[in-house]
Amino acid sequence: MVVPTGGGKAKKPLSVMDKEARKKAKEVPKKPAKEEKSAKKTQVELGISDQLIKRASKVISESKVVTPSTLASALGVKVSLARALMREVVKSGEAILVSKHRGFLIVKSPSS
Image 1 (cartoon, rainbow, N blue to C red):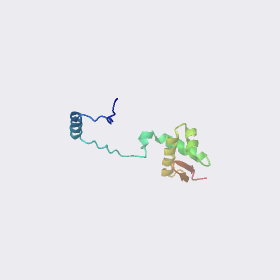
Image 2 (image 1 turned 45 degrees about the vertical axis):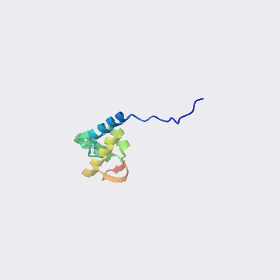
Image 3 (image 1 turned 90 degrees about the vertical axis):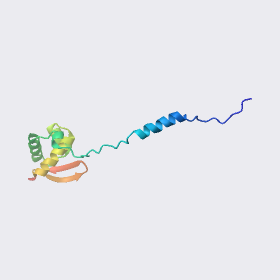
Image 4 (image 1 turned 180 degrees about the horizontal axis):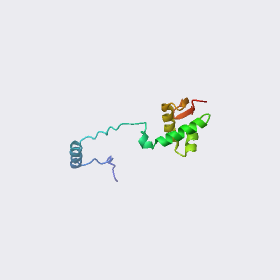
């Protein structure tokens, strides 16, 4: 008859535990590199040119109201780029910001 002796998970040998402890003490704790979190992409990263801004302001002046998706389809660019173009046109005063909710902008030309 076999008598159970308890069992359970075997522990690591002392030599292995000692090696791990020395290895951890030798390592310098790595601090995560602090990167500047720039939520706003620069004009260079997005590829905004003066010619593209002029085209966007022309589309805005011809329309009653413009959203990023309508501007993107009119210019043939991505919606994120159209959103950045809209911000630039509003900054320059060639358009008026009608409404803004998170990333959704609605602008119109100042004449209408």
